Image (tube, rainbow over all chains, first blue to last red; front, side, top):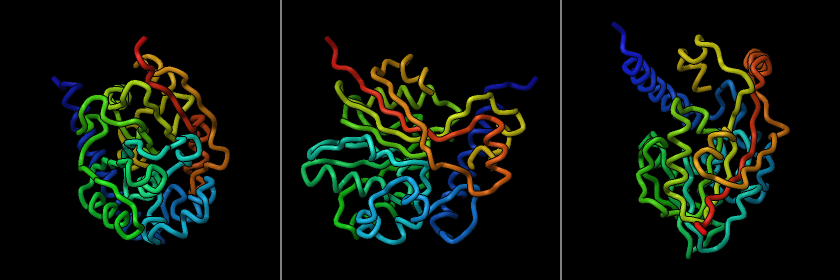
Length: 203
Length: 50
């Protein structure tokens, strides 16, 4: 008898591998073609300030794979602690670091430890400060009530356990804290063939 | 997603469509439109307990 929980767990593992693979490919091959726009063109389309894109390392900009601009409504202030959920190559975390300044703190969480290293290197190269931890958004490796703001850009839609992700965001936020996220939503239930296809899900 | 935020305890949940989002591949964009897939910006607050 097939255990649905086992099937789900297996699919999640496969999906995790596909997500890591796909976004690593964006970082390694920024001129490649993907289902989504990426890089400077996408960032400009979503309203990222040209001066940010000029100041950030070119490879961080080229690896941008977001679906909007969470900074537009984040209202980040000097001294705030920010979590970037799914920090990737680090562009959003770098911008957040510039905005919260030396008295603030930016933590990135990413599935891929190699991307964490890349993001931290990008941050250092641009005069920003961020720490990146390998981890899952369903189990954020941060204490309760430890950040003021959670930002995220096109990441939560990749999870099979969105409720858990939202609960985790709530947990790590201090009372009075806020989220500013951009993500993909669907008005209709996706077909099982899409749900079961990690490549389509990760797109 | 909006419902999840409210059910979890977030307040002042606000959202707006990202107007210029679209998929790069036409076939993907067509499928996305069929399912009403779009990109949205969302903000929400974790209230301070009274």
